[in-house]
Length: 280
Image 1 (cartoon, rainbow, N blue to C red):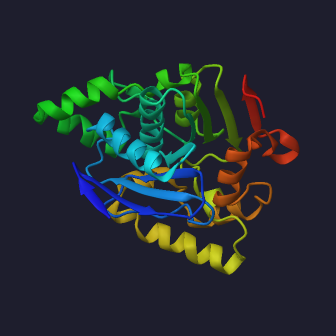
Image 2: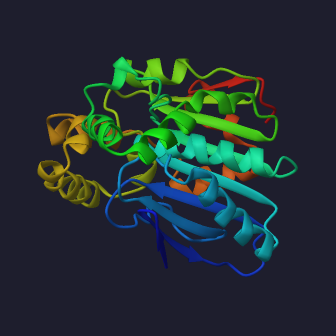
């Protein structure tokens, strides 16, 4: 376990693995929402909710140092919403710092620009808190200004970027549409709520377990206004939406597909995936 600059991280090694998965969250505790099965795992959380902008280049160096020691050949970075923005900029920092290494990024329902100010996400509680922190702390303000635009990563030749978002959520579609480049792939899910990680996390659950898991999530809404904004108002609507998603893979299968170059095969009759200049 490591802790510095408001980050918490945990490393889980898998002997013989040449891949590293950086699993990101923006919570007070580490969220192990991607299982540790076949790959080295670097679980990382930004407890200060600074969208991973603070000491970004330092964190990239920490991860690359570990990757070199372990003989890692490929790195996959993944996160959702605020951590989806973090995944974008951290993957970009890794790709720029090590241009000979392939970096993959799975960014779920990300905010893609936090500076210059983004009116599309001004209603989000996490973004409001970030803007408040910027107004009081010069170092935070400088870091956000330096790293606040995640759209640029689409131009990095050694970065394979997949944006995963719900196609009936206007804000998320707008954020994703702002990212364009030859290395961008889009997986669009047929939902209107914000949290695009849930269908992958709940894949294969029984009806009873799915209902219990949804109850746990809704029990946390009062403590997290951003979570409340990411979910349908009615828990039954979420259960119903997630019930018929057999074509959506589990998180570990999504990771495996990314490393195997098979993300273009995901979707009902391949319709959910729009490949933009990315070879399968």
